[in-house]
Length: 404
Image (cartoon, rainbow, N blue to C red; front, top):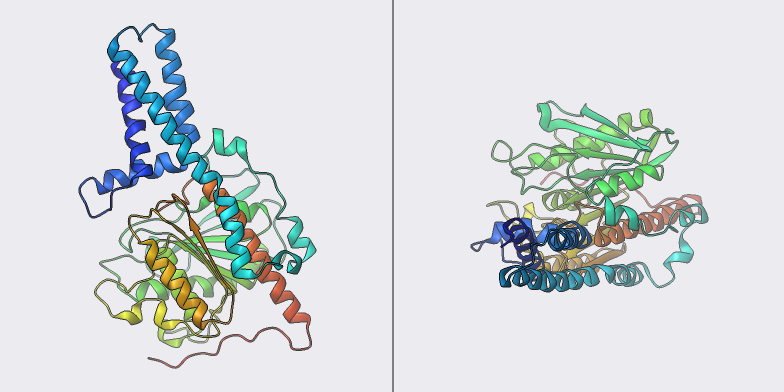
């Protein structure tokens, strides 16, 4: 029996099984399911080509398929390939589902409201070569990374990276992204890099920041760090060609929790100790597979929901319906609460077959999400431009709220 071929096919079969039927994180095999399932779910083409098709062809070429055991492995490979096809079909459908989510959140005629110069940047072909051949390679040659700029006094946990086009933009919008990790781990330069590099290649200045972690830090320390990042961007982003009057906050998992909190507590002095005069208002928030509940062992005030007001900024939420770390029901509930109270649009994109951490690779699913984030931010920027030039002026910055 070809043992090497068997091991390869079994590994892909396990990943495919967990992609289609993930095990909840808290149960036995939950961690194995999470890591194996995410890889197969977001990289079905790479899994099929590199770990099924080529090994099968090699096994036949070397004459290893000469027994009942060898043909049993081929049969397992065929069943696994069928499962990967199901995974790929789910991902292929995301583009239409997300388009419908944009129509629902922004209105059916939202495309006509996008300024012509911004709309032109939204028309692009799907990067199939990158998705099929280089899904793990997340960098771009036209983007420069400026690493390890200090924004606070907490050492490496208060460092940030900037990404900008090598041609050095002028008047660029800004996006700040916070990594996930349950507030206990994680690092900048790890998550949503396809998003940051895409935006930077389109003339944005993007920031990815570390923040203090548990157990040395607790809520609201992490939020205070994000507010400091916003303050740093207000002071220094022009050095990299940015205009920080247009600034979006984004995050993955725990970072999405932080982004939502920051967007809903703009200019709140309770979360800006020693820098209450710094403008921490934002243009909008992007939350990917985010947690929306209370912080560890703390009350509901540590969650974003109690901070929702009518003047909340626009939100873009994306969540997988097979997320085993954060229930999709929690994301649906938060989206409903936002829509009930906020006067700004809320886009909620539910990803069919999507797991937690769908934002790690250049996959069909995440490329569709990145396209939608570009469209969402273009709509918000167009709205703000039009408001700034109208007789009524730009929408006012949310007032500073009193200390709690």
